[in-house]
Length: 364
Ligand SMILES: [Fe+2]
Ligand SMILES: [Fe+2]
Image 1 (tube, rainbow, N blue to C red):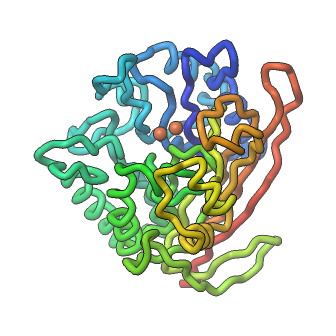
Image 2 (tube, rainbow, N blue to C red; image 1 turned 45 degrees about the vertical axis):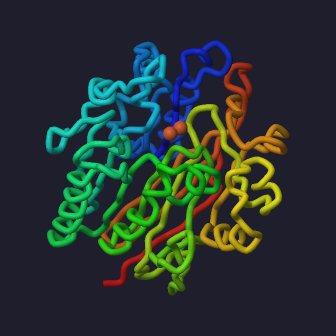
């Protein structure tokens, strides 16, 4: 199962306890997928890495669930934040998550890969974007990590991996604003889109933007600002789910949040709305917005708070959380999005429902 951005904040603990919502997300995931082998979290486990209580609360409240579900963690930008914000806490992530540290490289987290049942998982560290000799232009990630990723994915392909799954925090395809507005993501998009396409990555798991996103199968192109183009794939139906047969392209995912901070799916509301809530995106024409929206099968914020009429972000009281369940065999990859709602603190019954299914099939 895949969940993300619990982002447990100490100042929110007595209002909307994100650690409690995170634990509830895991509980529901274990209910609908009791045989899940492990969980993958795509970053922002806490709000401020330096605050020990945030890690402790998250781990404590999910203790029962964690004992049934090993975790692979991905470093998020908040997982290196300090209280004053002027420095980074470079070690907190690996002090709290028992994941490998490839090349001894640790900067607000590590990067690593692992194999499970014929699938190869590559977890990248997008906090490796600080200016250094290894990253003079402050690109998406440092040269050493990029070289390692290319080699690691190629080796996995050569060793006959059935699936390559890439995970990192900052999304290059998302229904909210980070992906198109933030400079640190702009420098990432072309590089990562190319990398994922050229190295035949199948699925990319992302976080950071707190909305529910799944793209269509995308191939790399330099012809438009998105660097993506929808691939026309052959489709077959099985058990009511549409499977895309032998796609060349890549499917990008964000399973909203397991905490309470929600970002709106702004592009779905048209160019005028995008300009109103994100003036920096004033370069987007109606055609640009349409092109971007066309890349996605799922692009939504399940919470329809009226606050989003004027603002896109920092709504920290959402009672809608999501997670994804992946069922992976040698030749089939099933993606299922689940959605929960209900006020946990007022004792409302929390409901969980399947909201989207999508399949990838490889005919060898
Ligand atoms: Fe986040
Ligand atoms: Fe983030």
